[in-house]
Amino acid sequence: MTAPLLSVEKVNVAFGGVQAANEAELDVMSGEFLAIIGPNGSGKTTLINLCTGYVKPKSGTIRLDGRDITRKKPREITKLGIARAFQIPQLFGEHTVVENLMLAVAAHQGFWDGWRPLNRPDFRAEAMRLLDMVGLADVAEANAATLPEGQRKLTDIALALALKPRLLLLDEPTAGVSGDEKFPLMDRLTAVLREQKVTAVFVEHDMDLVRRYADRVAVWNQGRVAASGPPETVFNDPMVLRDVVGVV
Ligand SMILES: Nc1ncnc2c1ncn2[C@@H]1O[C@H](COP(=O)(O)OP(=O)(O)OP(=O)(O)O)[C@@H](O)[C@H]1O
Image 1 (tube, rainbow, N blue to C red):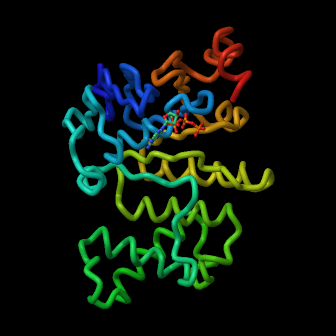
Image 2 (image 1 turned 90 degrees about the vertical axis):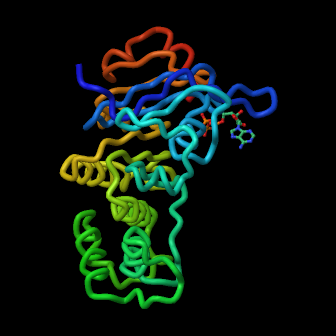
Image 3 (image 1 turned 180 degrees about the vertical axis):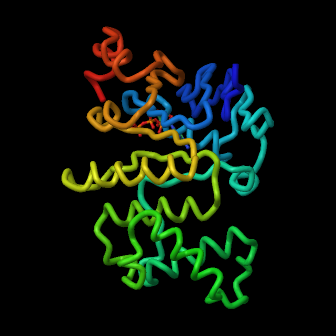
């Protein structure tokens, strides 16, 4: 059997009396598009924080391609290949879209030291390549603050791809996006990730999106996976329907 790209092994973390990860176990296979669903407060964002180094577990191990990354800093984890797209895209609104991308490209290449000129042709070319990939070349010169939410999300994805990740973690990629924009956004996102061979884990509350886009669903409940499998199996599980889908 192939080894998982990411493995979460018996991970525990508590905040006060809340057990946000409770002997959590999860394997993510290379090439998967895995959805994480579950009730509010069940630990979905904590899982992302653990895998990106923003929260350290009390016990347990997290591995990327077999390598222990449990105690590594967020920057080191990014370098090893895990990127994250935030629920609320963090863009420099007063700068153009392409300038935002150029900063990410420069940072990834180690040029983020505040004085080197960032406006290099090679940074711009790479930034434009990434924007083209997510379908935003036309708005490259627009101020980031003027973009509609769906395009802001795609810009955020392009920023994450600038880091050349093997695994991308997305916390509610369509949160705040209008109903009309959701499906085109997810179509573009999944196409780009498959084309770039990036494995993805996405936390999602919209079950229509999960049914349509996930290869596999992991149902989070009380800090651990309560069920997992292809969408058609998971959404026919009476426990999931009763305890999770009814409340998400
Ligand atoms: N940094 C923190 N400090 C204190 N408590 C936290 C922290 N992070 C998470 N928690 C708590 O841990 C539990 C799990 O939170 P988490 O955000 O991971 O859940 P979630 O499943 O992502 O919820 P939602 O669907 O509402 O985003 C919650 O009770 C939350 O209040």
